Length: 131
Image (tube, rainbow, N blue to C red; front, side, top):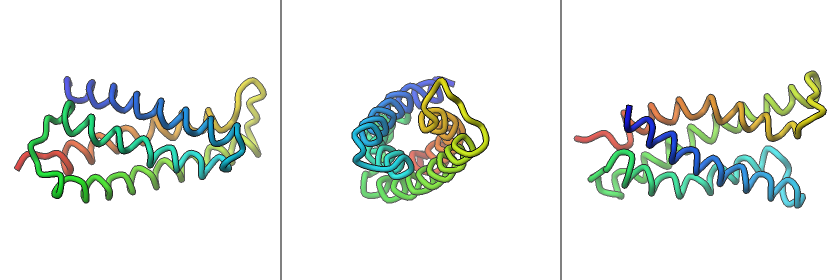
């Protein structure tokens, strides 16, 4: 349970980084919403790897061994997050208008909530597993 709490805390900081980048990219019109979410996810993953390696899982695995697996896990999480984000955004933009909040923020919140569970399982049982 302690590891899950650390994972969620570090994930929260990573998510904050992703949300801040998403808002920056969208509000400055640098990127459309789906691309902004994906780029924010990838960039926040750098902090996430470092913090989970050292604090959550206290891994002693060689980075040459964990980084390729982490990159694949980021790809899985990125795919899941981006597909869910795009689906929720489409749903809100076309069928479920939320006039009091930006659709892309609600879509990201929902996509993140679902993706975090998948990410924890992948990290715990595959990336940082002790040999």
